[in-house]
Image 1 (cartoon, rainbow, N blue to C red):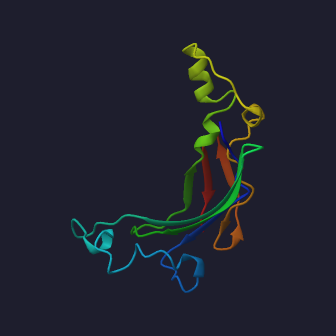
Image 2 (image 1 turned 90 degrees about the vertical axis):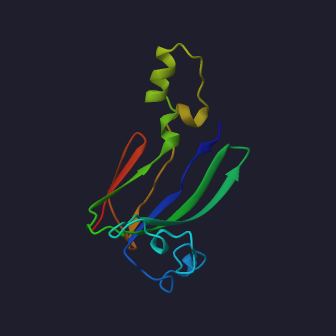
Length: 151
């Protein structure tokens, strides 16, 4: 099984920040007024909204160590009429380690399973830092969910 190791996770909670301030986001044409598939260009009813997220992932696969290291930049557009005070992210790889709910399920069902060297060390997705608008923020990881506060 491949092991996911995330060297750093950068979260930018941004409400309408232009691509001019984020040159790496210029390839994001989904939010364009010319895109007929973009939800804002075909609202099913007045007052409808949904959130927009843009990801930039840089990753390196090490076949010898069976690791993936990398960085993630995420631009989150809050299109809701409400201010957000926190954000949650799923860290699915953390579900497959000793003592996890998946391990418990396998044990209860008497399903044979083994863990690789990283899983044995309980190294799922490792997050070393979270930034919001360029500033480091505290975050908490509870098994497969990362929670961070937003300004």
